[in-house]
Length: 391
Image (cartoon, rainbow, N blue to C red; front, side, top):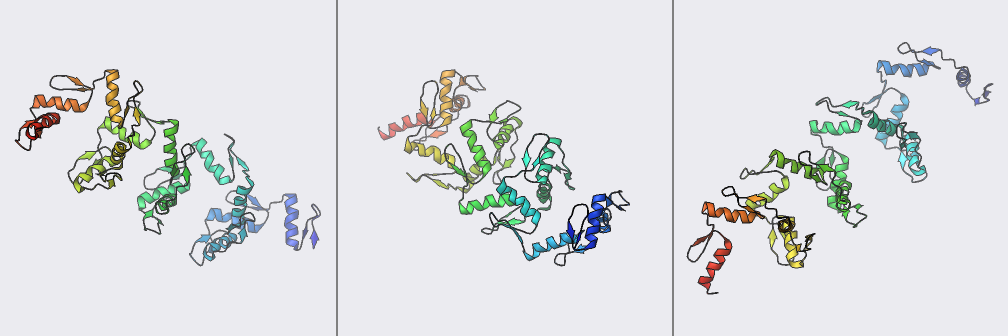
């Protein structure tokens, strides 16, 4: 065994001792002809030159994928064999690469050795820091060859490209529904398991998606981060803002395939379609009355519970429906937003305007089943029917 005269390190092989001595002298006698970078050994130079030539002399016998370095093919082969020789002593999780184990162990140690020079944020991995730095620089180095849209992270580009290819590589083992992104599959699987891992710290309501929890929490905070550029009305959800904007543009992108009637939002179309199907999937547990949508059932149930959740801040009168509160508040404000196009008479409630307009149109939509006499208001019909009943 030979020892290095500079550092005292011992080597079994004289060639390793020779390389060690050159490290001390900083002799780098193998220069790259392409970029002038120099190396201590010819083997290191040969490996480096493959960057310029693109040569990948080590092919995988299983899948044909090629690699520049032999050590990389050794690591790659473990993906086929399933071998994971590096295990974590803390949690026994196993890895194919030693570097992966080292990165994993930082979770247990809480170690974050890479810090951002801009904001001081600490990262556990260098790759995380590189991605984070792009939030400061605005750099988006990964572009889609189909539409030229750019991304700061390669994985986001890969996900985006599935829009063009139609690829959905993640399938649900329960119902075989397929998804473009693994995270969406995980969320979907909770519809089968019923798992709701995200709970609200205010009211303990649970959700199957983190995004739904964040939306819900705005009810408690009152936060409305999405504002309309036209009228400055604010909303707690982006989807609500998008639907609201259509009141300004007049856009109605959701059309009924039965009657071609159009709607600003999908939920309104879904409710409308029950007119054609006759479907009423929501039934009241108290009286078995059925409804086309869940909100109508919720409003109806207040008849049984007596709940009146909407109170007037002026007189504290309470109402079952929010729309009834809004109509009531006009008594205090004096507002009459509904005006007749014929005589310009104004009304606080839209239904009163509709009744009034029948004076001009002569419309009498309520007919007596006994004598077929017609009336312009339902209340007038009810009074008339007492003649026949003797009430």
